[in-house]
Image (cartoon, rainbow, N blue to C red; front, top):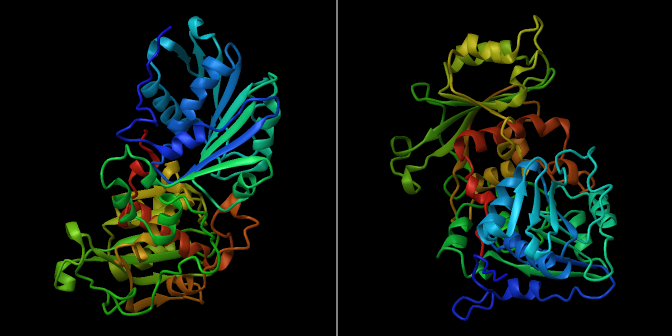
Length: 456
């Protein structure tokens, strides 16, 4: 059966892809199982490279046998793997069945199968790959909420055969247990950056650089192992804007404002934020008339901070916001009369456009939130699009307001980051979540294209 894959060879003379070829050339023959890791920035063709090796495994090394491919979630199995597979492999070579997703090769190609499953990154209580025997496996975006137990589960299931047994991972690098895995004895690592892929549109990597903070660029584009230690918001400066993030501005009651908040049982955090543009600054500081977002007021109640009381107080002092961003617990019944916070928001503020962060997984991701806020504080173009008013109106700050967060919020020792990414602690967590909700919900909603890597 004469097959031509819909992809340009990594050995193409006009656009050779050296890093992709380096990974595909790793010798997996012999009776010992091999462990191979393709680690790189976004757009470095990680998924595509895995699909190419998977094709070889199904049609040459393990004809008629089964392999497994995992993604962090069930949604990504279809949105990432299946989309890439269909783009590369001609449709007459296989049959795809859904729920669960399985690829079955045609009889002429041996009839092997590929189980495509979630490795349940968001659900640590679920088990995977227990029962079936596989001849090979791939784990895509393995570093995302990496847990050694599910890697071991997949590894233990790869035992069907005597030659070419392998378990490969493809991922953006993250300093958790995944780095330790990649540098383990007997494991082989190929590292690539987005700039290594000759098939990306011209200027793609540079454009992404302009949308990220410096640490995020090093990790997500250059494919570097970035140490997250010390201050989380180390790009925040108390110099006066535009050199820093403190601006000589006070709340203008005649201008619209945005309300960002995070609810707690008794304590909570509420931020009043105004976008500043030409009329406030005297010029447009950024392309496309993007504003400077200025935190002009904050409420940090430590008791009796329920939604009904706080919303009424904010309405009395500042009027009605033009948009609200908050957590998905808006519908939680936490007030004395059992009404929901959502009810009080509608009853007190009226029909205000409201974005609750949590219903959409992408915006709920703390990695995305932290990167978005870091970009607003200071990006690689030396722009500062988030500022705090020098005349900040502060109610009940109790050393837990927005300035304290910027100064004192620190990474933990790494022991809990696999599960939480950002540290879970009571004092600064509410104000951090409030500004993170505003970052992804209003100030700079992240582009979904950041989740999609271009194929070679």
